Image 1: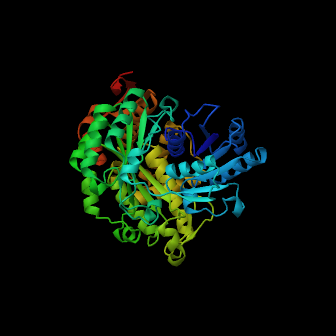
Image 2: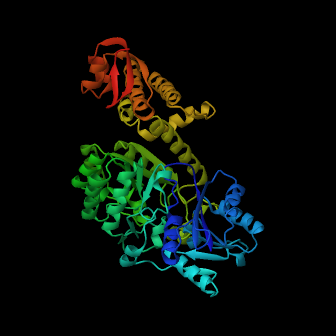
Length: 542
């Protein structure tokens, strides 16, 4: 038997790794033998594509294998593409067995099965490894398969028995620019908008011995980055520290990405994240404790802020997440969330429209809560009580402006500094930038230098209106220097800067107040180069 497992990624990138499909492939190969490419026996083959590719291209690749069965991993972004691809395969191979699993199958199976008008003979819901083994054990023995198989939640011992797709080489790490690393399943929290809201509340961990073997593989492979898939890496504080120590020992070279809960951060964790040079992503979602409580979350702003202080103290890079269109929230409340988030100096701020995902508590409550949302993936909210459709649109425009100015413009180092003389809150400043973009037909260039020119043009306009144009030479120096430094580090670009002040006074004098800087620093025009070097970047004479 030849089985092809297909994964359709959202976009190219280091996170585009078919880990879910590979876990099923490893379980099948362990149960039935075969090395994945043996044409004379039991064979499991992975095929991948990107969402932007035509379904016919993936279908052709799969058909070439002359498979007996084809399985798809369905997520909210690829459901439609997977259905089209499966239908094309069915038209060419009439007797092929088509099956599907993944979050969309578990949460919203309607219209996917052959009985419901879809292309799939069998749907696998829940955890897929043992369910797939059961499915093909039945077909190989001649027993009739079930059109719907519900996978049982695997206990800790069963997780320990699962083969690792990295260690058994189902996934060839040399083919990827990043690795996905699964450490645990389940989530102790009940955020109503998340798939985990109806999932297993107990956290089940993979054995640390297996994880250390995978770490050694990552360390030997030279893989550039590793994304840790745990929704909350530091749920178990002591285990988090043990694993960070293991990473520092076995695989410190890749760039590591973690999702953590701010309230569970400790100084010990922060020190290790800093030693690793890791990046953290932290879900804030809303800065209003009342809104958070309605989502099944808790928020103590003082505790949250103090834990973020540990990251700043250690020098850890982190980003924050916000969601707009939440039940109980308003546009004014979302503005306040942005103001709070940016007061914490995150390295990036990711802002999302609420998705009312199938299979979540929020989806079940949506009608009673007055949520109106799209029937098509990603099921974005259209309106909510207190957050009418025009306000959702304004929040989207504000979020886009924040992404361009703060994230793409790499403004974290100077953002609050340049706002202070203007007496503006971040949300008001960014809403103004949204209007500034709209007046320019909303066109945003792709390269960082052009984005910087947009930032400076907007700042020129604001400082002029505030009757403080005398501060602009200092503003220009700060923005241009930080932009050049960021390009040197991230893009390897050398930039020549026209400074208005002595860079040593500007950058090393400890003066953070622009008005104070303009008052006490003597203008000293000159040119400097910022260029990449082995230690990162350097400032020198041209």
